[in-house]
Length: 284
Image 1 (cartoon, helix red, strand yellow):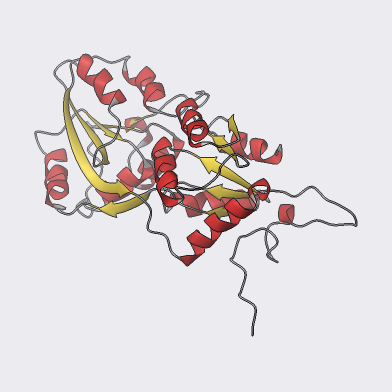
Image 2 (cartoon, rainbow, N blue to C red):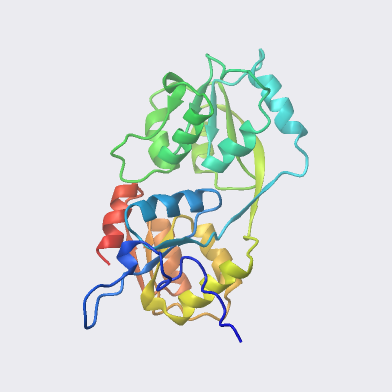
């Protein structure tokens, strides 16, 4: 009987990045397989970037993204965005918020010149730029911010007077309201645009095999965590798992605490910058 084919991207699979291979004789330090837990398509994008740095990485999304049941409010929002009722600012919470909202943009309509667009981090800012939002209209945290989140974005937005001004927040159904609370307290008139649904990931055989490999050989894997919500899904996906021998890098103190609460044996906080995360991975 033919042996089952190895899962692409698992440690020891021929053709993986050079960091996963070991030359010479005798024991060698095993470079961990990095599990990228961001939603798709960001997970695959990060995997490609990490592999470009010689890191053995695979996608294991812990959040699923889906379209809203009724897209008509999004179509109506775009009509308003180009009309007299346009807001002063549109805040996007993530690259997926950009992709799902802009999927309903009328063709050949440029971004309104009088409307600012805000992003909590460079990934969202890059997604907005790719959609044609001019750099002059884009607000984002300082490049040297310790964290890329709503608090860092608020440091930029609080410099302006928001009293009586309309602000939209484009997000998934539900979500955290920290930035909304700041804007509301500053006098802004808020409107939430629900651009997608968020929930547990829809895994296939490959993803289940990667989870099983990570649980069977935790010392050979490193979890790259960017969401505390993702960890609640992981608990549901593996309710009886023992995480005490597992290690993770967390891009925010809140995420690190959620991983420790779940039971991860080692959790290191690392800046959300890609280069910083690559250095932290290399140090493992």
